[in-house]
Image (cartoon, rainbow, N blue to C red; front, side):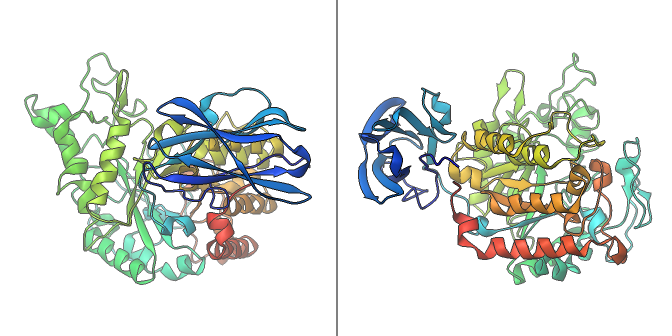
Length: 526
């Protein structure tokens, strides 16, 4: 292997990853001794104008030399790169995407953010995603809501049918509370739940209201008991909130339909030129899109003291953060783009309730433009982790739930893809992203990869690479599912013959390794 100069945002190379404006940060570069450059320095942006600062040689030996330069944090987003000249180098830049012997765009610069950081606990956390209706049932019986098609716990969902979203298995929040030993034993310390508000489907992304917890899941009491039990174990609970849209039966949308003069009418994009007479998410008639330019709507959702974002973070519920659904399209329509402002307002509102919260955004594309540092702490890293890893480890044949853009990659191509995405955002934003091998919106990793060995290889990347590992409940026992509908199968608690205990032991060992290793939680990547 030919070693090249290296720098990243970890503490080995950056003296302070969370500086204040006008602080001076020491940045360091590791250079192979054989390169022997005559000049090493940084080019940094001072109010968008390039400035050069020479580096000094810290130490050297027969294999490598360490150089250090002072970087003034002139702007909240501080961009810089390394310049090497002379010696055996000739000319070149070290940027966040690696070594280049030609000029490259500023978009590849290293970035240090002067905005507040994510909570310290997020550096070492491992997240466990739970789809409440399918994880565990307490055995309680609830008053039917009317949309449910009851199914037996061991029945596999029928995929891609008009009624698939209405399949009801009876998992609930008290059921999760009863399985905390399993989750904690795996080494998990953060649980992320898909939506728990009343809705018209099992996935609950079509909320009817945000003012209560779905009685089918155990209601407010079930949530309060779950968070109390989790917090007693040192675990955290993250909720799922859709700021982009609600359900067609949501109380606000029903008022808007019934009364053109209502305040709620301004919460949505009513437009006769659209397929349904109003803007929706993904042209789904049942999911009307919010117009987040409306101050009253933003107040009710985010900023008011009684807002949805703030209310569920308070006692007795005390959610530790939010994952925002469909965040890449939230606040965007044609010429309208208030996404950054909504992200900032959400973070500021959460800070009024807690100084230890986490704010994560769903984003299915390149999220770098939405990760300036003052909004989302990170995103769900589908493009920058899941797809490249799938491309390397995937089975030869396509399966139902595989993205058509998932190619067959070599390991080198996978690394190039991950590096390209990683190089476009602040290091700490990348470390705050949730990496995952599968979720409720994708096929299961075993189905994508085809073998246990490949899934465990993917797990090694999940645990070892920068970013927060997220595991979808059931992946740890080798459950399969060729698409999102099939991935949302129930957890087979009473069917040990469906458990792959070799996979389970691998997950348990590697999750514990991750959480116990400073290098894995907070180290760099060379």
